[in-house]
Image (cartoon, rainbow, N blue to C red; front, side, top):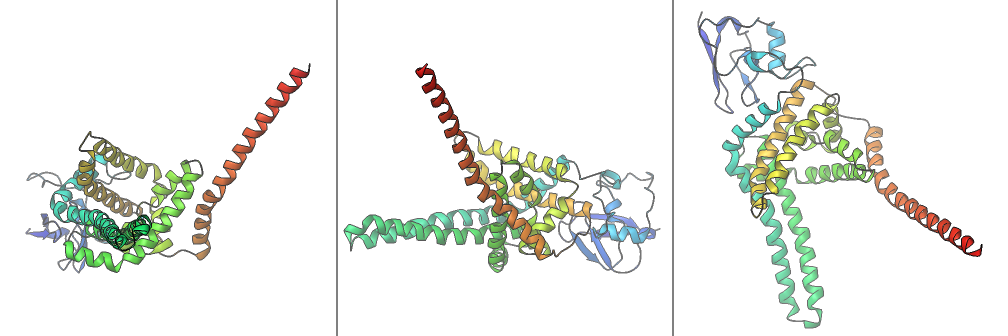
Length: 361
């Protein structure tokens, strides 16, 4: 029986599939190499059941699932969708961390130029903005020497604010380029500009809630950070914004927090190790950053494939609840500080009182 050749338009990976395993009709196919989905007008072959490299001639073929189930899993849909391991066998959980890092390395090599340029744009826009406005302040101080320090300080603050805005734009473009491999630097910057407001609001929300968690004795902050780590990818890939993206990320992680945390810890460990290299750690960290972001994005796709569909919108009461939880940390910190100071002063008072009574006797 003739074979049908399938080619992924994202990474170019090809594979031949027996004709009898190709259901009729148009459907989505998910590439087992890069994980991207694409429409194929020849039907929905059991793409996720193929292994790389191809099986040897005459090797036994895995049991054939039903076409309807294969199409759903190929599109990464349904509660039963699972990430696939070697020979198409489903993982009990997420793919191993070695697989995650290996796939990230392949994409890193292809996308290094675009991603590093976007990162440099974000970093140097901040530095150049501060230097530019500080220089303007210094020039103006020539007209008013007595105001030299205030003018330079005002220039630095203005440059910092303008530079942070441009830096956020660059970071948004960087995330867009990680999420969509088809974007060049220009297209990524255009997308990042369109999503500038949503990115700024999303980072403010996640920073506020996670920051409040860290003020509540650190542990809640770690838990929140893992729950919300995919929100930025959800904003770009799924179009969800604000608290909907934050809570959707939490829903994806639900039930697999430990697995997600373990993989994020490995990525963080390598980031820390690279940045700690004497003398050149900062430069190494810069070059490692795109790889780390790609790995986090692939982890998002793995979690999404295993978890299946989750709600896209959430009630206002739940959104307000999480903002309130974040606020508790900022309220609790001064209260805890006052209680600690009060306890210290009380203990000192008791000690001094005891010493005074002892001297009296």
